[in-house]
Image (tube, rainbow, N blue to C red; front, side, top):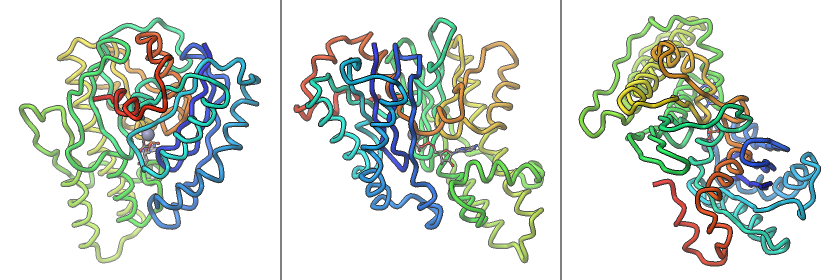
Length: 339
Ligand code: KG4
Ligand code: ZN
């Protein structure tokens, strides 16, 4: 089964064709990140206008790269939530129009389910459950127990800033650019992760698998404000110490939950899963007892459409009736939410 998927929830305009949820035939991503770098963050109006400009050529390119025509496409999947509403609408409307013209089933997907399924793209091994997945991106931080395909139990979530958002905000405080994740990682290479000691937010009971990074962000702001003259070494030390604090908290919780719930695999997904320190710390703490899985390519960590095609394929396998869903009925867009 071949699925064309469209993703426009934030500042990436993306389209992909994936076969049987695993084989990526094409994966085209256009981004307006350079425009947002000037403002130090995504401006929703600017992102939406860029989606309008890019969506048609990107869908055409995805079809061309996959070397398929619409007669070889079985369904169209699209991110319907969560995200910037004007950006989402452009993807959803495009997918609706294509589904209408080519008479294809339309499958609205939750963005985070896409990030979860990014780990199945190009997978060769068979899939076994339970899996504990940590999805960490700019907008979301979710710790999820996956008991089967599309059988998600939310164990914890971000109580304030998501990890990626914290990376972006700290990069702005340090005035080193946008998006913060890759820039902080690069800056941290020359820094000492032990130069500043940040304390983890104390969360217990029902919140023990949730995350809080706003205190950490404030701690960084206090340090930056007190700096007399910020030289390159101090900036690198702050970046390294901050990155270590985030990676330490994220990996602690993924590892603890994987042990508690008897996971056969621990998964990292979302933009922040591109972070090498996070991968290294998690692997060290898992100590070879539970295999660690992260996306096979860096472009599968950040927003892309191939991951949505995979999520849609496995949803269809589990609930074939979604193929018969009438996309004109508004309820379908809330029915398939992750939680
Ligand atoms: O998943 P994603 O592309 O978009 C959302 O769904 O939000 O994630 C984007 C986030 C940004 O906040 C970016 O700073 C972060 O992922 N990110 C990273 C790295 N690469 C991207 N964070 C830490 N280390 C990285 N190498
Ligand atoms: Zn995302």
